[in-house]
Image 1 (spheres, rainbow, N blue to C red):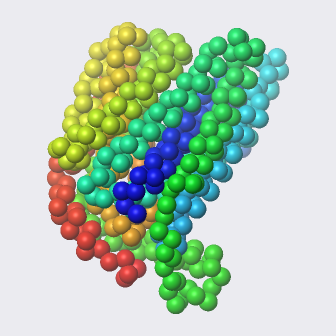
Image 2: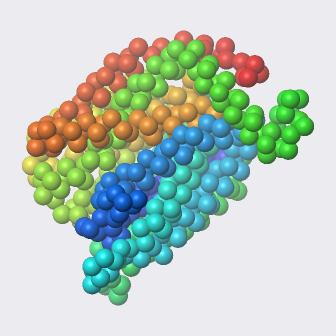
Image 3: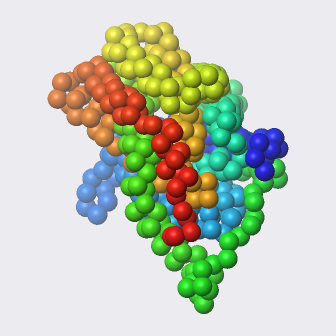
Length: 450
C-alpha cells in the first residue's frame, strides 16, 4: 500500500477538508464572535464567579485539550489493534463538521437588553465538541503517514499534506472573509455573515471528506484479541486492551531515548511557534494599532505563504535531512521574534506574516514526518496519540510567559522577543537527537510484549 498515489491524494485531501475549520472557526471568526457577540463586555457568571470572554475561551480550549489528553492514546491503541484508523478518522470528521455547522444557530446578544447574553453554553458545547473531533481525527490522520509513505518519502508526503491543508483552509477562509467584509452587498448584517461563514466551514469539512472516504486505503488485517479479552463483549474488550496497551507503551516510551529527546525539543520550540501565531493579533492590535480587517488579511497571508513554505521545506529536507531542515526553521523563527520587536507599521507586520507563513508550514510538516520515522509502525496511531497530546500541552508556557512579561514590563515588545528562548532551547535539544540511534530503538521495539 505504500506510495500508492490515490491513497496519498485521499489522505492529503483530508487536510484540505479540516483545515478550513481550524483557520476560519478556531482562529478567526469564533473568538471574535464569542467575545463581542456572545459574552460581550459584561462577562458571564458561572457558579457565582465572573468570567470575561477571553478567560472563558481559554478554559474552553483547555477543556478540549484535556479531553483529547485523556482519550487519544487509548483510541489510538484500539485503532492500531483493530485496523480501524479510517473508521475513527471518518467518524470524528463527520461529527466535528456537524458541530461546526451547528454553530450557525448560536445567537448573539441583544444590545438593547442590558442583561442579555448570547447562547453562551451552546457555543461552549459545540466548540469544545468540534475541537475534540478535530484533534481526535488528526490523531488517526497522522497515524496513516508511516503506512502510506516509504521512509525516503515521509518528509515530502507530510509536507504535501500540510500544503493541501493550507490551500483548502485559505480558500474557505477567503470565502468567509469576503462574506464578512462585504456583508452589506450580500444584503445581510455582520452577525449573520459570521454565522454563515462558520456553517460553511462545517459543510466544507464534511463535503471534502468524501474524497478520503473513497480513496484512502487501509490494511484491514485485524489482529486476533488476546485470550484474556475474548470472553468480554468486543467494545469492552477493545477498551480494556486500549487502556492496558497505552499504560504499557507509556512505560516503554522512556526507553526511546532519542525519540523522547525529540519530543521534549518539539514541545519547547512548538510552544514558541504557537505563542507567536496565537499572540500575533493581540500584538498587532496593542502595539501597532492595526484594524481587525488588517489582522484578518494578515492571517490569510500567512496561510497562503505557508502553502509554499511546507513544500519548500519538504524539498530542503530531501537534501539536508528533516532534522537539519527543522533546525533551519528554528533559526528563522528566532529572526521572526527579533524583527517583531522592531516593527512599527502595518507593512512591516504583513512582511512578518510572510516569514511566519514560510517557517510555520515547514516546521509543522517536518516535525510530523521526523517523528513518524522514529516510531514503531505497528503502533503508529498510539504513538501519534501521544504526539497529539504533546502538541496541545506544549501550548501553555509560552502564552503564559508572554502575558507575564507584558504585565510586568507594560510592553508587548519585550514579551515577543522573550519567546526567542523557546527556539534556542529547542534548537539545542534537537541538535542532540541522533537519527540513526532513534531508528535502532524503533527496530528493537516489540509490540507483542504489550
